[in-house]
Amino acid sequence: MAAFPRTTVGGVSVSRMIIGSNWFLGWSHCTAAKDRFIQEHFDAKRIADILEVFFRAGVDTVMGLISGPKLPDAVREAEDRTGVKGIIVSTPSFPTNERTPFEGFDLGEVERILDEQVAHGATFCFPHTSTTDVMVDRCTREIRQVDTILKMTRERGMIPGLSTHMPEAIIYADERSMDVATYISIFNSMGFLMPIEVDWVHRVIHNARKPVMTIKPFAAGHVRPLQGLTFSWNALRDQDMVTVGTMAPGEAAELVELSLDILSRSASSLDLQRTRSKSTLVA
Image (cartoon, helix red, strand yellow):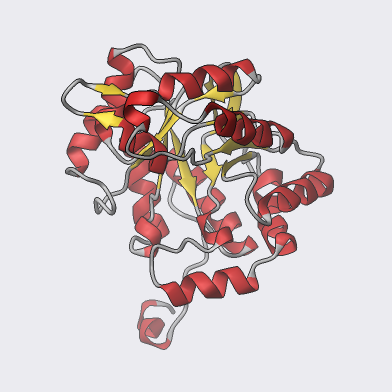
């Protein structure tokens, strides 16, 4: 199998496919019952089984809350099995309240959270969308108080960026030359969880001064992998990335193989599902 394509973010080489963690940790964007099922059935070993497949295929970049449950142990186990060092993109939330836009963040709490990410080996650390987007001011075209977090992130040897669901955040950060190496942005063909039309987000990503890490290419399972990956890999720039979620090692292998086929403009070589209704399609 060919080595998976890479790009550079903040001087660090990362795989263009990023391993997402929502499906590992129980954030299905589907139902509470599905969330509970994932939380009850996924342990660090099962997550490591999936990470191992990605790591061996050259997909070594992991996104999520590295200080959260299960993920740190899973990453370490996958590293031990493969000898591959995972590149961690951590997305912690920082507490905000009605005074934060004016008085700033609780610096003691920011220090504690950032130090926790360092302890777990994060290379990148971005305020989660739950922090970034409540600080976006559309009137003044700025992201209030977040510069402090970015500065403190850089002081700890991690690379700062922003995780956002708002395209404005990318535009305003670029306009103000904020110290960010990349952005996390939702991007999928059906516009799932996107606040404006897909073509608008596409334009924002293409105009971004930094590479963009896109998330939710499958719209939380509403878009099949062939459609989702064909759209994303063809719509994005060569420096941009696609973050995928899986629930089984076989799925991880399929996503890698399918992506390599799409990027090389080859017909998919994956085995297709076989059901009784498709019996007339084959000899």
